[in-house]
Length: 93
Image (tube, rainbow, N blue to C red; front, side, top):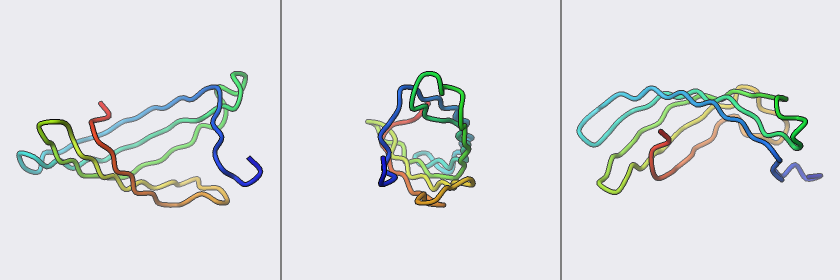
């Protein structure tokens, strides 16, 4: 929108690659690379693909994984953060 807040789109494409390494029985480390886009309209489906990459840790629990990721945005634009921290529950793959 006019304030730079995300408003979504009609299409999105994401490519993820993650390399995990076991640290102990419950902890894993991860390196990841993401590449994707959001198209405001279907005709913009293949436009503006952008990368990000980073590292994270995983705590495996009986009900799922807790994930803490530190990401880097190498192509940040005005108003975007260069680094992000993301917490989530469950494995992406």
